[in-house]
Length: 455
Image (cartoon, rainbow, N blue to C red; front, side, top):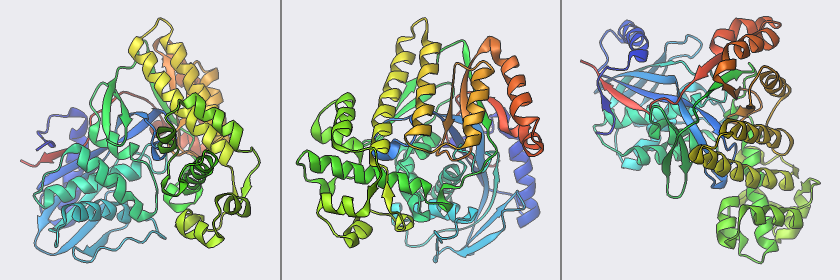
């Protein structure tokens, strides 16, 4: 009931019509309904949602859209308007997700399986689906999570069930782990809870979203560095999750707590009942900047290597031998503070709000680059160009190691900013130049996920 909507969104009309025709061409019938889930840009608060801390994203216009018809075939047929994403058919009673092979259809099936398990559905409705996407893949704008959310919405509607937006967000955040990604829930939450015209402070445990009015006089520009990074296909992302988990346990042990049940740096702060500043002091006091070896971690915690591998490391981090605990914990606690400072500046709206927010974005990028090491040379170059072009703040957004930057640009500088970034980053490189139209764009807070009933 939360998701039914008429065809009144003008920006979707062309995409809907194109998808409807592709669906009819593929399946020889018309779709019964459409499901849409937007991508997102995280303005500040990178890699801290899975540590239990609030983040500050907004939905973008780019989306994942699915056309669907329900059948009694007992199969789920998946097709994509992009030819490089191959068709896939699976029995509705035998869904299997291969985390060693993160293809597009397995992300879709994460959403299907998550809703099935949440609702305890013994059997699923058969369906034919055609998927279209306008979010650049592996760009840091949450294309994979939007696909999971869209699939969750499709499964709910096809099986004639109703779930709240919060429940859908929480379920889709959990079920993306079927593909091996140990995320924290930001992407799914903003996809479902977004509202047009406002960014959101997303907080967890319990999940809640608070409007954040962005200041007048500045716009946000997304620029893709054109380096792709699929977080499910590498261990970079999960390695950071594991390092934060180990740092939590090492800090807890130093404070005499029962560390065995603590998994998140945010939970440790709650347990100690101290400020973020005090947590940063604790990091300086307890952890050393040099990487920790497996032996040192095991000796400090009093566990065996086998216990480390079985209880703490993830499946794709079993190979890891060195862990940068000090740097990761410092980033998380300082970045959590950046988010709260960003929201406070938006709420109080001082005369220099734009400058304050820009400075926070710049500090966030420096922390991602130097402490969390989730940037890459192309992202750093693009951030520098954006700042030289007139942005007051610029930073990587999303998981990093490629993907996009988000820059805050005073309105009067927008045209010259776009021209300078084109000339200095995209034009000199033939591949980037070919991708420029979809790689550099102004964005505004968009709508959340929705169902459209055909006819």
